[in-house]
Length: 133
Image (cartoon, rainbow, N blue to C red; front, side, top):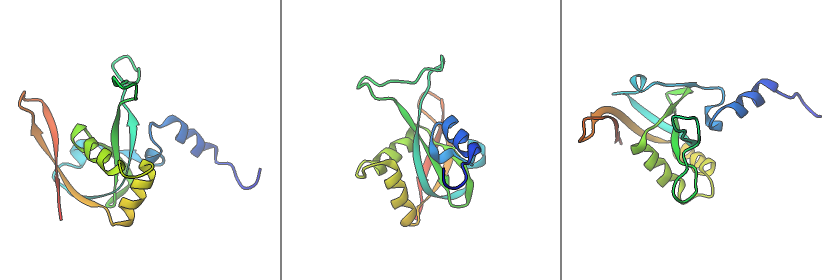
């Protein structure tokens, strides 16, 4: 084997839900609320039900949620909810992979956002997002 094999990195990559999480710590919603941040990368991670089983859609596909990284906090990642996962899926759609779409997003300089706390019509907590200039 040429070079040095990084056992720690390989272990981390294989225990995380998404490669974008590797060598980063998770951000809590309270840490991103009402801050102007620039999303420079994204990926998807599988959803799990209460029994620890992957959530499978009627189509047979595994349901996912978006995971983003910010220019201002590059050593952390944030798991987005339903609203912004929809945006991530729209970003990924015209590309051959989420990694390719994420690289294009970074090359373009990212997208500035502000997450805010909100409520659904049924009074459930919701994290809303505003796309900034």
